[in-house]
Length: 180
Image (cartoon, rainbow, N blue to C red; front, side, top):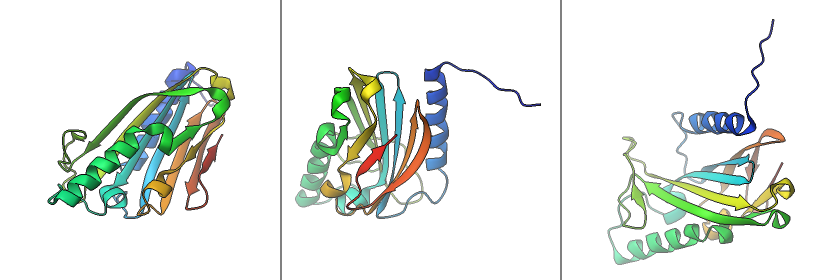
């Protein structure tokens, strides 16, 4: 006998995000050239969570030591904070970026939160992006321009939890669209 639980849509999607987040933090997730993106659609809310080795975004994984490295960190933060230049939700959905949060275990400066160290000597960037969509029923995908901005990123492992279901897709240079 199977038992099925019915949960409100928001609860089910929150659970899906939690399971996607747990899978992304398993040992061995830190691979240079590869990052993970989790996308959750919940009603009018669009949430994206990026986890990437800093090397993909900066070319180094430590606290900036030179003026050139400090400038590189500021440019990375500026690019990611302009969420619309990196992620483009379906235009008809009329989504508006509401928050961007950047955090790393490497002390990168005041524009990026410092999180607990992983203890493995490798530093990641964790970034969360939120949008509110005026027409969420029209939201059917997101174009992702991370690899254009950050050429050290060669593969993006994407997991999606949307009202239409869950799916996974890999993005590589030349393939930048995620649809659901």
